[in-house]
Picture (cartoon, rainbow, N blue to C red):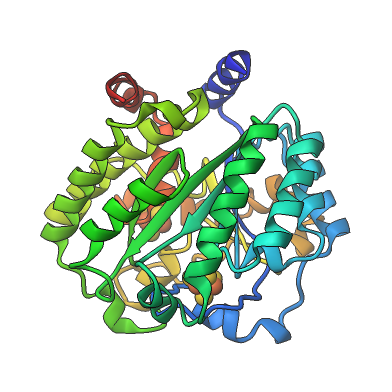
Length: 369
Ligand code: SF4
Ligand code: SF4
């Protein structure tokens, strides 16, 4: 595995197609979270023309040097053929790092699909990220699904067992801090360290156009304090962390520290790699540099007409062709020239990954874990 990291780092230094992908594999979701930034898509799921497995295979064949995929949705594990998708990128794109973000509503199905994925992509790091925003009924209320908290615990126990037979599997937990749970986050932190199995824990800032607009009313100072508490707590439990999870934690801590600057000082801190090294593909094959730029445009904070780079169906499923259009070039230039900034964690993680001058910070965080 360490050889894999050296190879990936070498590829990251070379210029090429984006290496970091957020892939919304389904618009379907069985939750109705108050802080969902994808609520419009979830609500119109039945009307969408979702990429088939064959179409995804074509995308994978035309996407060399793709290091990392974050599978999202909707709820990814609602997609019946999900377990076949990572193997396509593993085989054709050389992808070796995968994350699945889940609401944990389908413990049995999730366990079976993950087992199959771990086995079909043996030389890879597979990470499942369980969302948990509060304890007990409060979590169910925020996520709009009765019984969800019990499902989170059930899946967590299954994952704990699964990691023993599948060492390439790692478990993360993530909390979206919003107005709905802020004030009770320290109790949650204690709960999960005492009761749940995980290798990394992260906190996100509610972002985008949330289903409940009030969810974004966050006390930024309190978020920053909690972020500090999460970082110092992470140092106290190294035993469940392998090399990959440690690196992941160090990377995200670095990204988190940069995001805190953005949040507290409301300013640009580093060139955004969205569109260059990171892309977002939705369930219908539409490509954007990130999930936030369109929101900034709608809120009239940008002079761009559209952040939509096009649909892969119109470009022979070839991301390289799509990125060479005049419009794509204009969008990417705009991001750099206008020193675009926001609080999107995935983009900041990609910025850290693909900006070598930030790597010493990752190393410093890695060593301190
Ligand atoms: S936040 Fe995730 S789990 Fe919740 S409704 Fe949106 S897509 Fe579903
Ligand atoms: S700074 Fe944010 S909104 Fe701007 S391109 Fe990057 S991720 Fe998108």
